[in-house]
Amino acid sequence: MERWTGRVALVTGASVGIGAAVARALVQHGMKVVGCARSVDKIELAAECQSAGYPGTLIPYKCDLSNEEEILSMFSAIKTLHQGVDVCINNAGLARPEPLLSGKTEGWRTMIDVNVMAVSICTREAYQSMKERNIDDGHIININSMNGHSVVPQSVVHFYSATKYAVTALTEGLRQELREARTHIRATCISPGLVETGFAFKLHDNDPERAAATYESIRCLKAEDMANAVIYVLSAPPHVQVTVQQRSAQCRIPVQNCSSTPAGVLQIGDIQMRPTEQIS
Image (cartoon, rainbow, N blue to C red; front, side, top):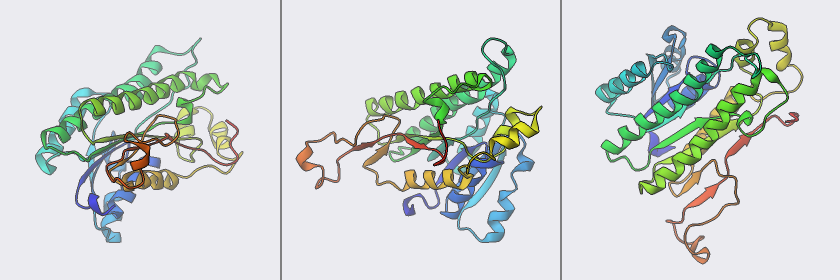
């Protein structure tokens, strides 16, 4: 992680849960972290990180990711104040209990705007920020979900699952486009199963008992587990790319040279994490 010291990371949805844990971990490793959220007053980590004496800094930024103008304004501010983005963690996401047969269009559109459009806009702007500064070792990490790889028999998350399948496709498409652009900027997808955060309480906001039961049936992942995964991804050597492709590690140079040639490019499958006790 030493090569990231002093460099700039954007973490979306940084006020709570996975986003807050990731932001804290990056600050602990000496990065300048722009943590964005709709309610910037909820980002209480800045004072905590400062009082703890972490080597990095956390800069809270208010941004509604469903509004493209606010996203563009955020990237403009980052350029002005911090030159640009070196790492982009697309973490923000949400689910609304809107089944396919009876769901409200507004709920579907909100999920599309945050889970798909915001990820795409932030990715585009982060890449452009890196490109204009000749940053060739940047990293874009999409926090996905196991729901982006399988559809569970729960109608309230079927549309949400569709948006996460989109993230799976977007990350692989991004990897391909980065290769075509002949850049070493990397794209990674991390797909967790059940993580104990406030997610279920927002999904089942009218049924807190059901939300609480979601996290009581098994020992869930913690937000810190996701932060550790992000650190693992960023710590990988420049010639290793953790991507959405599910395949055995393979080398894009002659096999006999893989172990001895630092320029070898390895592909490692999408990081899929779930509690040991989770069924699907």
